[in-house]
Length: 247
Image 1 (cartoon, rainbow, N blue to C red):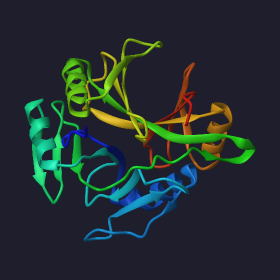
Image 2 (spheres, one colour; image 1 turned 60 degrees about the vertical axis):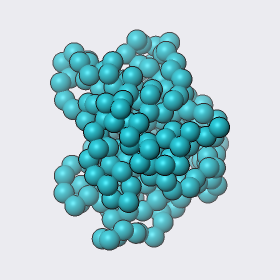
Image 3 (cartoon, one colour; image 1 turned 180 degrees about the vertical axis):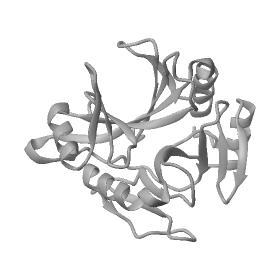
């Protein structure tokens, strides 16, 4: 049975500073291999990245002001009921705008929307038969807020937790079959006292070759790890390529 307050789809929004929007959209269009929809919104500030198959789950927004960031839309049958449930779990409601804007206990802003979507896109196959897809959002949480934030996102999604085999600072929330994006709650290092934030994780069948493809599009490598590579896009937004199966 569908629970009206539980997400049946998750969309990741790349929110761009006004000066960065054109360059950011161009990079992510090329990196994903997706088309860009016609702009929409009162100021033509929104667009979707359109996969060749399946429903959009990556979108872009030109902010009126402020830095680049990432936010989530949780698609639910009843946004008001979802906001009430999230508030009971520790969230605060920021605004009602036809959708409900909410902040998690640590201050990560996201939205409840009721837009229909159901078909997860297949990975995009690039040159040399390399398959890749954005398949996860990592919510990066300062250590003092981590336990409360993990409990909050588990309650809001209703998804089961899975421990990492790499580090105790990762905890996965495993999306149900057909969902386009999983969630990773990452506990930041003791010296990182910044705000809670988020980044995108790709899965790919050949991380080294996919890294070279991203570098040719204007990205740069920030760090190499055994199972993932940290990059920044041309406007400085951090993301990761991982060895996860993109399918």
